[in-house]
Length: 78
Picture 1: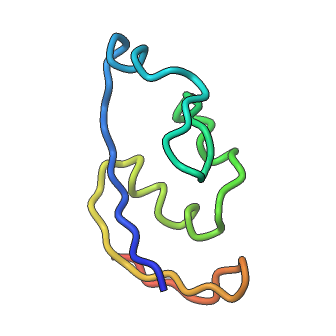
Picture 2: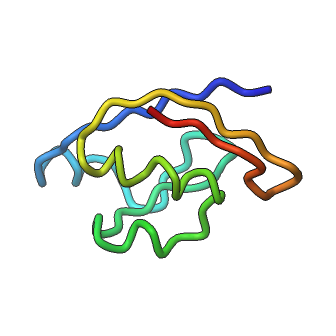
């Protein structure tokens, strides 16, 4: 079982420039700036694709996503 919080931030160009491309902040991988329009092209978990439209629209949400292996078995997002 996992609990996940999704946080967003808006950075202006000078702020974004202070975070170096490829910086590693965790074992999950390195940071890369991409256009928002290309976000859904990334190699994402299936469940990420369910809630990312709400994140991109600036909408608050809560929910549960159940997996069987790497596939979504069921979900409930509100």
